[in-house]
Image 1 (cartoon, rainbow, N blue to C red):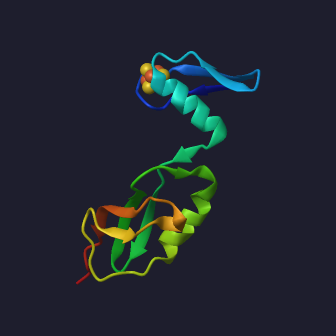
Image 2: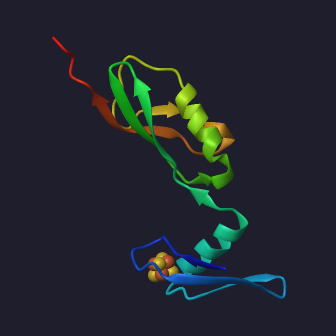
Length: 117
Ligand code: SF4
């Protein structure tokens, strides 16, 4: 299987193969590529970003650490269902330990629409 390492801008093209029961990665310029290739075929993870509607606007949010890719839609639902507070600031944690992962959901931006007069 071929994939592009996304751990740095070099974007190395990795070849990930199973040889004698062991996962072998080639094409990586550094050890982080090997780690990435092995994780992608055994336990792929992603940082999830989203936008949540709040009273009068939206907030942008993200996971604090990458979570298992298979939990993507569960995390989005948890964000959607999170109670809406009166005010938000960048860095606020809106969900701790989302979906049983060790990741929190934090606010990365607050966009309040101007009120019509
Ligand atoms: S293998 Fe290393 S150098 Fe290549 S993209 Fe990944 S992190 Fe960057």
